[in-house]
Length: 65
Figure 1 (cartoon, rainbow, N blue to C red):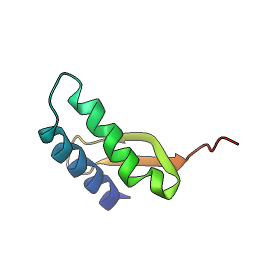
Figure 2 (cartoon, rainbow, N blue to C red):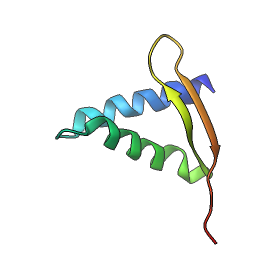
Figure 3 (cartoon, helix red, strand yellow):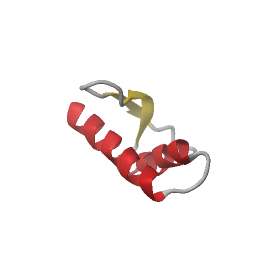
C-alpha cells in the first residue's frame, strides 16, 4: 500500500498547485479519489501524507442498487 499512498500524496500535491481558491486541499483529495480509487471500486477509509511513509487505507465502495 505504500506505493499507492505515495502516488496518492503526489497526486494531491500536483492537483493542489493547479487549483485556485480556499478549499484547494479538499478539492484535490476529491479529484484524486475519483481518478485513482473509484475506477477500482474503492474509496478512502483513512490516509495521512505526513512523515516519510504515507498511511493509506482503503475500503470497498458502497454501490447503490
